[in-house]
Length: 468
Image (cartoon, rainbow, N blue to C red; front, side, top):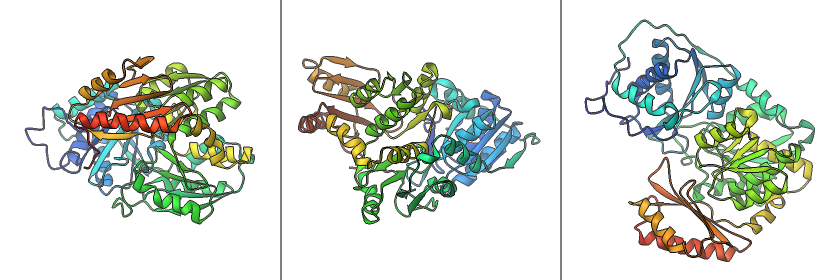
């Protein structure tokens, strides 16, 4: 067992760094090799996998956490298939492609450098979340003792990237891919590894930014949702006269796009674009979406002959609903894209390949493919605010707009449809913030004024921007 046993005040209590969908904690205060070992033993006891896929991101602490997980699994009699430095989607792929009993990815995605985390799946890359096993694993890790015993499982290193690249290329029509110049910004995360493996198979010229995995984050934390992190990608698109740009977070499960003018495109509109593309070849299929921004998705999907299905935001909820509906695609405005062909999991490589294919088949620039949709349903983009009492803020918003609302939903937070504009206000599942999204029907000034109005209401409730 790794050294540094947890202190008495930690053992016997649930770990606060277990979140709704995964584990995220500070290293080494919360997440360390000892805790990782215990989590592996607990996972093995609860899930009982014969073998697991194990992968890790570029963070400086990831290798030691990965080693501790491998030790925990093998001492529990579980074989470990270690695919090394990779993205979360590569763990998903290897888990279902190799028929493994489960998978664990060591990553904290876009969190600061002093954080790390774990993402879990079971057989078939099915998610493990707080309502499907993660709470039980947390309790077992915190309360059980796992004495050293002779290792029964084996750990072997393997490279599944070329198999993954072959799968990706099978999802697009190679003869529809035209020569394009594309800026790719990996943010010193792991996305560049897959781009390099794909490159020989594609007619694209890549302009590579922050391409090498580097857990020191020399160019800042890889999170393109932060406006200050978008400038380098945008500038490179303009300077190189590229056809479009792509940026990812650290484990590249989220994919962000920029048009040929260097303009950042909200993920909301990419959901509609991909849904429309898939429905053109698969009419009548179901498309799952989250409740934060909905009007564009509803309009696009119904016009293309598809069936829109709304569910709560978050990968566990989207995947569960997609399986239940056998949906061909699911999209979140947060730039998560899910595919039935990918075991209903989110994927950060396939979206941009599908967009590149669309550029080839339509002959139009990316701006033209989304511009009309943006004008028809302008949106605020997600605005995050720290707040002491989010429930009181939700109640205040409902009270303020109840008289003018024609529909009120609480599928995920509070959604209020006021006819020409609507908003969604929800508590985060992973951070101490409340998230606001506002959209309107072809009236950008109305959307902007209502956004300001709601922010003033939140400020009156004590809200502030994170980090201020």
